Every structure is written in structure tokens, then in C-alpha cells.
Length: 381
Image 1 (tube, rainbow, N blue to C red):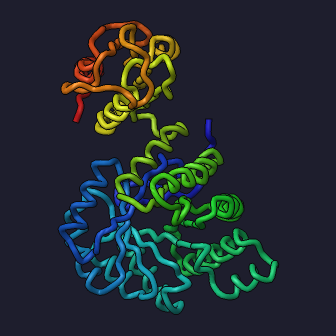
Image 2: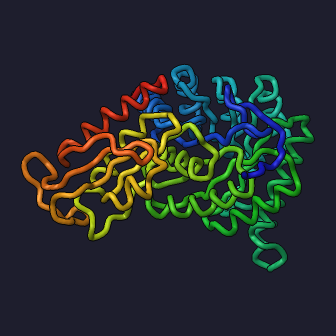
Image 3: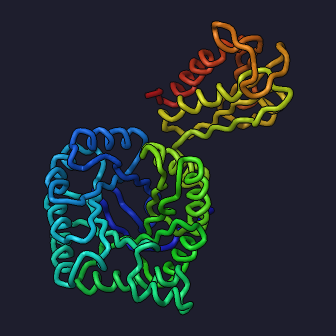
């Protein structure tokens, strides 16, 4: 069992972050904030994907002006992302943002930071102190270049300076992020800071890359920190649709045992025994399961060696059966009705409950899934 680090708890709207609360999932809109319709639509899509908190960029007075309507329409608590101009942070608080993401080092003088902290305190709005490896203060950057500090140590010093600044203003509703595009630097920074403060952590590998590369790097960095018990809220940063960030984050939490109300899909890699289109079926079953929030285990297996045998613990499963020549992956002939030639079985907890032609497998699977969910008092969305 993962032992979570003890932290203070803060609230971002209805979502508790830290204090032992479940690890929450964040993403960020990728539409112009001034386009209220597009931004609201993307937030709705993120909510359907399972996002808990959404960040919205506020780079201009026009964006700040649009924020109130976005907040009004949003099903998720909104964190306003503000840099350089403290007036935008004040406007975001006034617009109803549930949280602020600022870098106190670039927001202006102590008086300007104090004004933001006072407004946030009055409205019960937490502040995320964000430190990025690529934008360290110049004195710290020089110490890194001179070999006096490692990059991760410099990030921690920057974060502690900003935390002290805000706490000296009698503000403690703080969470902290220490992000680098390098996995090792990110992990080292969070581990170092964990020993020196009790603020909840927002964790991610920033600018992680495209969907494939970014998923791998995020899984490596966030996965390590989840095992360390250092994650309170996470964002998977991908060059791609924000909904994919949420899907990856949720699957990562599930894999680490932090989300127990989601389906688990297991599927075999296929081999020369395979007689059905495992790849296509697995992708279709995965799409079906994305709309279900119930802790069930589903298997898609190529033959009866792996399923229902090796996958006997699955609540529900598909496996290829005898009949039809072995076929691997997608390199198979198809007729007008789709996959052809193979046969399959549907099994529950290792017991075969139905047999069918390959072209009927998905239909029969849906029927058995509906039956399983009905027994648990659940339905597909």
C-alpha cells in the first residue's frame, strides 16, 4: 500500500487537495479564453472525460473579462493561470475563479503579491505557487551554472522563497508545483521539497511531449512520485487534446491503485495462436469502458490458453476459440460484414457463458456487460 505524505488540506471549489484526499486530476483548456463558447465546450468535454479541476489561461484583460461567464457555465472548479500582471489575478478572483496559479516572483512587488493574497483570502481561493525549471530567477540560475546548486536544488530554493513570501502575508492556502521537462530533475525536486514543507503538491512533468512520448515520460515521473506518496493532484502535460491528458492521468492513477472506481482492461499481445482480431476488439472494448465508472476487470484475449485460463480473475472477458486459421494482429482478410472466420467465447470469472461467431462478439459482449452492470445496479452511459 502506498503511504501518502502528510500535508495540509486546501479546497479548490468542491475538490479537496492534500490532507489525505484522493489524488485529483487536472488539465488545462487549449482554446483562447476570450472565446467563451469554445472554452466552455472544452471544459464540458473534460468533465465528461473525468477531469476534476481545470486550469484556464488569463493572459490579458479581455481573457479576464471572459472568465466570469466561463466560471458560471463550468461544471468544474477553475484555476486561473496568471503571469506578470497582478491585476489579472485580482480580476480572476473577482470573476469567481476557484484557484489561482501564479509565480510570486514574476507577479510584481511585495505589495502586489500582498494584494493578491488578501483578495484570495477574502474569497477562500487557494494559490498554487508554480516553479518551472526553465524560468528560475537569475541569481539561482547563476548558482546552477556555477555548479553551486543542482537544478532540482535551485527549484526547491525558489519554491521555498515563494512559499515564505506568501505565508508571511498570513496566507496558507497554498499548493506547490516543481516542474521540469526532465523526469529525473522533477522527481529529485519533489523529493527534496517534501522534507521541507507540508504544502500539498501539484505534480507533473512539464512539456512532456506528444501523446506517445509524453505519456511515457509522464508515467515514469508521476508514477515514481505516486509510489513515493508525494502526489496530491496531477496533470499529464501532452501536446494533444486535453481529454487525452485526463484519460492518461486516470489510467495512471488506476494502475497505481489510487483510483478504484474505474474499469481495468487487460488484453494479450497476440501470437500465432490468435484467431480473432484482438487489436480491433481491444480498442472497441476500451472505448466502451471509458464511459463506465465501476471497478470491473475486463479481458480481451486471443485464445483459450490465455482466456479464460490465465484471465480467469476477470469479471468479464472475450477470447478466441477453435475454428479459423491463426491470425495475428490486423493482417487478416475481412468480408463485407467485418472480421471473418474466427469464433469467440464470452467468459465470467473463468467460466464460459456464451459462444458466438467472431462478427457477433462485440454485440454479445455488450449484452453481457449490460447484464453485469445491471446486477450491480449500474448502467452504461
